Image (cartoon, rainbow, N blue to C red):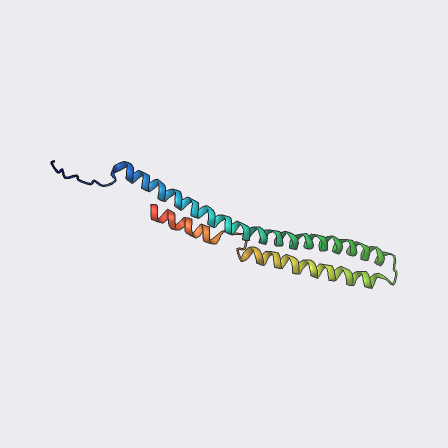
Length: 128
């Protein structure tokens, strides 16, 4: 029996392409998982923001209703106009507070995907 030596070659072009595709798929899957995780957090913040703005809209409608009622009461020269004016100002303050809170949420970036965007920027920089 004659013993032959076999030479082990590298994975070759197809092996390299296969490895690259496998790594790229893993990268895409990890980014999708990160985006899904952040999306659940953003969804909660979006629901909270929607509730705040719904309250602000409701308060604006009350402010308009009481403001109109105040004008009517003043035109009638009645004594009850003072309480209507107080209620108008109360709802106006509530509206201002809710709108400021909603704007603060937007400025804090609670509806963004900071980690996903950071990872995508890193991927872009690494590939380019």
